[in-house]
Length: 76
Image 1 (cartoon, one colour):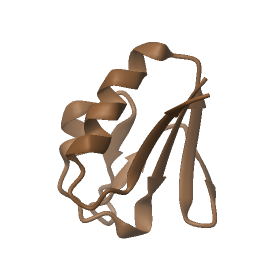
Image 2 (image 1 turned 90 degrees about the horizontal axis):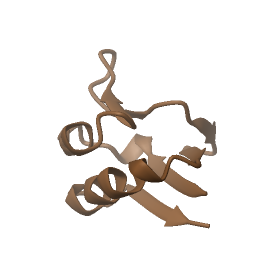
Image 3 (image 1 turned 120 degrees about the vertical axis):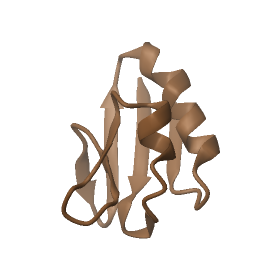
């Protein structure tokens, strides 16, 4: 299981996550911040749990590229 977490409130809208992992992220037209697709939100953390292991590398690259370090990717 891959767990991807986004702290959306801290997003600065740089768009790196969308460029590197477009199947997991997109930019909101409302506020210009990143959206973790198909995620659930709890206390400001948007979390996606998936068995799609092909999403691991792009999401990991997005996490590393994020200038404000608000994306985490874990394998459980």
